[in-house]
View 1 (spheres, one colour):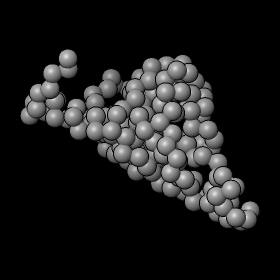
View 2 (cartoon, one colour; view 1 turned 180 degrees about the vertical axis):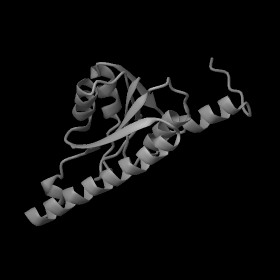
View 3 (cartoon, helix red, strand yellow; view 1 turned 30 degrees about the vertical axis):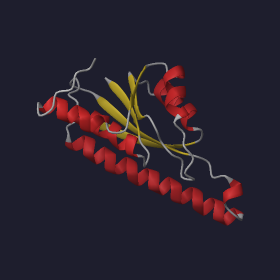
View 4 (tube, rainbow, N blue to C red; view 1 turned 90 degrees about the vertical axis):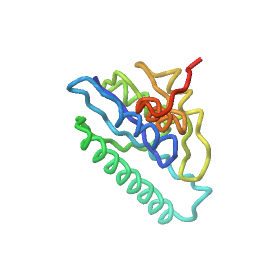
Length: 158
């Protein structure tokens, strides 16, 4: 199985990572940890040097995040690689999943750009346009799943 795991610095993204890390996957499963860096908006920065530095810093943070997530998943015995791309999040996710090719995309329900703009529509767009299955993880879902699977808490599903 080939899984694209989309990460950013949001809480729902952290839950998506936990969901993938805690699940039992078929032997040979490979996860591509993907982070999308939005292009810097010129109206938020002054001068081309500032734009370039801001874009480099955003990319550095995304690379650091994907490296940390990669380490977590490798420690769980999964085959992992990572990618950081620049562009529109929904388009980049769908394209990456098609080109790689993925069997499943896992992402958080809510994420935020570096400028703090909510991009919850990204999950909806990926679910509508993805060429494979898409799992959207709500914030807090990983903790609830751990409680249910551990037997310490039972929650009726209906």
